[in-house]
Image 1 (cartoon, rainbow, N blue to C red):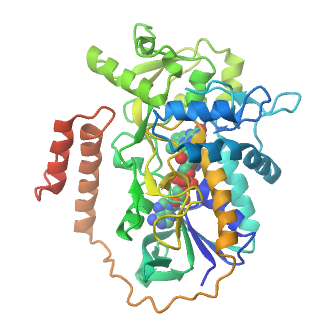
Image 2 (image 1 turned 90 degrees about the horizontal axis):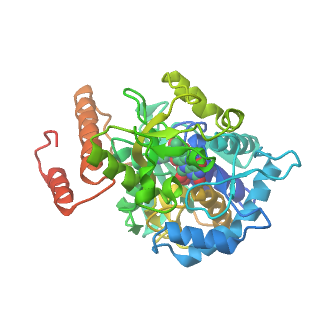
Image 3 (image 1 turned 90 degrees about the vertical axis):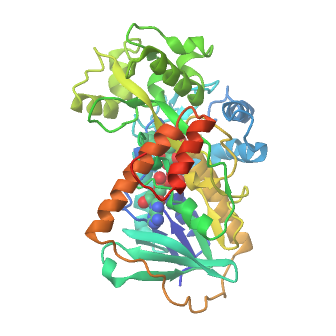
Length: 461
Ligand SMILES: Cc1cc2nc3c(=O)[nH]c(=O)nc-3n(C[C@H](O)[C@H](O)[C@H](O)COP(=O)(O)OP(=O)(O)OC[C@H]3O[C@@H](n4cnc5c(N)ncnc54)[C@H](O)[C@@H]3O)c2cc1C
């Protein structure tokens, strides 16, 4: 029996577990992979926060609402932008090494749709700097028990209240499904952009938390709002590695093969317009010209600046024989981030008692229809710390113990034949969702896709 179970070992899970350890003696942190693999670890550009005296939370608030196309929840956005600075101070205290100027002030970069330079970073591997520091603290924390390779399958429900999780220890799957008990369960399972054939996400981003919460009857919100990043590496055979928006923030141009900065025809901010605008602009330009990719031209950025800011991107491009000092990088849009998810209030509570959600799996309404760049890492910390503070008040101690969870659900181990069929189904579904519910959607396409999903005939769409 734990006081709290946190499902997910990305930024939101690690941070929430650390915050919960201040009020609970036994916190379980579960991840289906290991702590060094998550979208958080892959985050490049940085984390948005107002730390510059010439900036203000009001400007950050307005930029977030504008990028969210009028569909953000204003209260949640206010919580986010006003809570940012305190979280950055905590992260610095924990030892996160953000880049700094010579005078030791925090270095800030610009990203799309921000009216100020307000994105803190650690070169182009900000996520790794955050996750490694947090994982280090979690590993040393005697109140947190980490179970890696533990796949959560479903929630244990007792009279409509969540009382823990059912899961499978992937290191010894033959032991069958196990029950882990806790009066508080936090889903921090990340996004689900893997449902699209072209995506920037790690393999673990399969939207498990949303499915688990939905099966338990929790309210789900805004799943149709998916963010497509305009600049994923587009080289035949290469995964859709993200080329961070900070590259454009530092001055790179988005051009076609003739050097035309075509996005300016769609938006006065050109390549620094909000992501949804730039992705749609690229999509339409590719359709109109028949080209396969557009390009990021880094020649406006000084070579020593490129070397200092983007060592990871340089390394990946070299692997695919692109010398970004002398060649433009071929890019196309790819699915990147899920704005929707498990509906929560501004304290992380879902519609199911005992169940909470945080990070990309949650939908506080903070991102509206289009997330402002670098607000997602910030969300993990602001809402993770609030969730813990809230629980310390409303669930300070637990006398509550679960009754017998009954028989564990039967999750049959897949046979070689079913594994093959499942892999094919997964591939077909990814292609279907990419082509029928991708960057630009039409009623006919959506209907065709739905028909394929609901038909018994599973021949490739
Ligand atoms: C390439 C890339 C670059 C990005 N760059 C930035 C950036 O610069 N700035 C920014 O703000 N955002 C960025 N983002 C978005 C941001 O990284 C994510 O939104 C954020 O990190 C999500 O954190 P999370 O903790 O909610 O989820 P994740 O980091 O995705 O972690 C999810 C965790 O849940 C676990 N899990 C999932 N399902 C189960 C299950 N069934 N059982 C057990 N465990 C499970 C996974 O193993 C993983 O540990 C980027 C995303 C990507 C993919």
